[in-house]
Image (tube, rainbow, N blue to C red):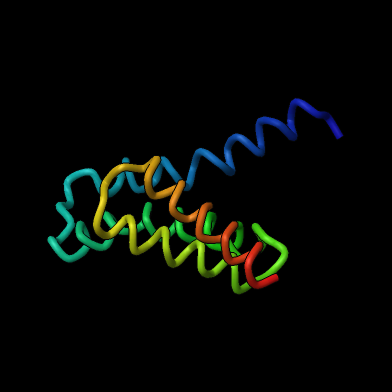
Length: 100
């Protein structure tokens, strides 16, 4: 099969589903509920990417969950990203050393 034809076909398959809503739904204003729903999609996608990494970051599930929970609690009260990351790493490290 011709590789150029395959590349063009893959580009069309990728581009057409993105283009159709922009062309046909240009004049339709989404409801406030739909706008709020779409605002949460990046957070959901980020969660699905990060959560498995948290669970498999240490040798033990308990220390990994402890680090993740401490990070979530720290993020709830503080906005400093460096502090959040440090608190999660430190708590996971301490639990890993002390208990296991």
